[in-house]
Image (tube, rainbow, N blue to C red):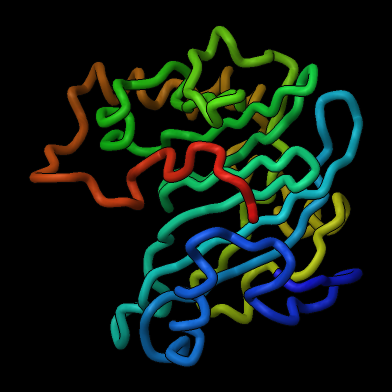
Length: 236
């Protein structure tokens, strides 16, 4: 992601945050963007932590081929986060969009929702219909809800991608004010995490399990259904 300023457009998809193993792919498919392959949204965003500190994350989302002529956009392949000051990197499958990234006592924590019964089933019906991670010397590790700090709340941009075209995706540098305007009312994008824990969304996996709802996959699950595609490898 080449440098951006203000709310300007991203100048290049291969800039100063080098995502290991991805640059060659981006360079290869860029000329084919209009007709096949993948397209990528890259942006930087301010993130307010639980203690009021504001940090900047570098983010990327990759979308699969468009499905032309029946679909305008393809499915989301994966989400990536780079926090350069601590050399922290996250990559998850497309169905797992992170909603919390915070740092408590020098330790990064992250939360991703389990929004569908099939996902709930594949990951053993997680408590609060979400999966929680802590970053340590061996990278990201999934932890139980009981070990996730309770004073954290939703703080990541959620409406990053458009269902219509790449030109409508988020881009540039997103301040806290720009994020609030872009996402709009929190209730339309799932609410805050506190609302989540107390509401219907936080009970989804519990309800799915009670109803016996899920999916039987034949063979290996697709990469987009892998919650952790990285183990804390460097951004560079």
